[in-house]
Image (cartoon, rainbow, N blue to C red; front, side):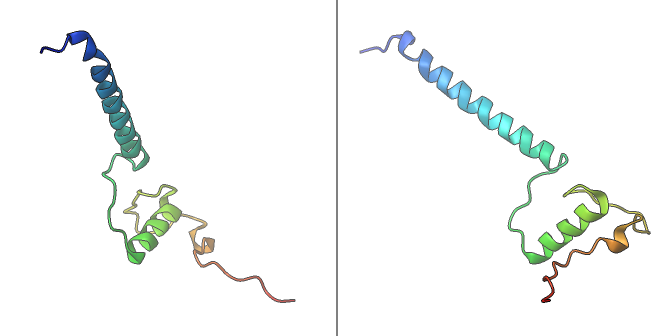
Length: 86
């Protein structure tokens, strides 16, 4: 028994919406990473270098080839210090 094509239209719409959502999320993630592919299996070293790059360039995935750090970077310490007991 044949299926009328009118019954397949909702499935086509659902498939198109899933495709549009997936493409939109992929584009947003690509834009969020500065046009680079998403990183996978990050370890502590990678996170530390990403934090340093963010402090240097202001962007999580940005990298700089300047031999000197920008002004103010010497005061930009990544260590989180405890409050002193008084």
